[in-house]
Image (tube, rainbow, N blue to C red; front, side, top):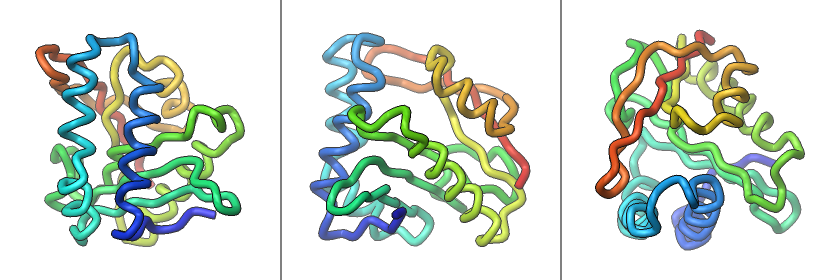
Length: 168
């Protein structure tokens, strides 16, 4: 089941966010850069503010009592870039490391695409690190195409994210 994250679940969101981000990117930058990013991007007060923003939507992927993944969608001014006039951004889509390879990411992607259509969007886009080969393949398989790139700063390191877009 995919459902909205509630404000009361902010600690659970923070824990899952830090776990999945670390699992995905540990070893690709220094521990200091990684920890600085986790402390900033997943700060509890920041997450609470985002959960209260009507242009930001967080969703959990839940099986029984277990939270196995999450998704963050941005619209309007909450988007990190202005890529397309009538678009929705997938800012985060992560699966718990113990549950990767089960198709849960695809279910979250399908949900995001459905949300974009329900909200009357004509495109959906995201940024993905140029060296995240599994994610690049996943997005390409889902019909996304590269439309640009931008810098992603993690601590003292500047990385390149590819910008991918799909018409919906």
